[in-house]
Length: 122
Image (cartoon, rainbow, N blue to C red):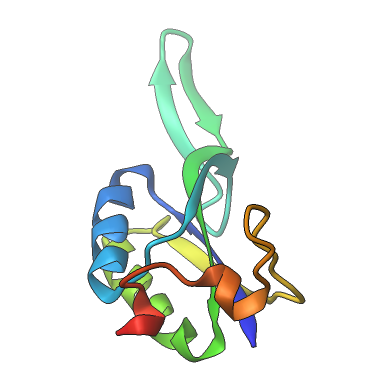
């Protein structure tokens, strides 16, 4: 019924990702600053004392909770908007969500996720 998409992306791609998501009707999302490493294993920088390895790179984590039937479209939108073609573009995870409750109204599940003009109302 409901899924959570967690996308780890380059910091400089956030604007493009947000704009692309808004264009398809994704209104609600959360963004967190994170550090991590993946296949690239980090980068080597040069400093006064010579080269040194930085293995935890700054990235952004974008979280979206949405209806099952929108997952593929959102994944493809994020993938296209975050893509640079270089190592370190990021990764997308999809998780099941058991229940959603909007605190202010008490709405649950689908109703709790809906926004005016969002992807489900198009």
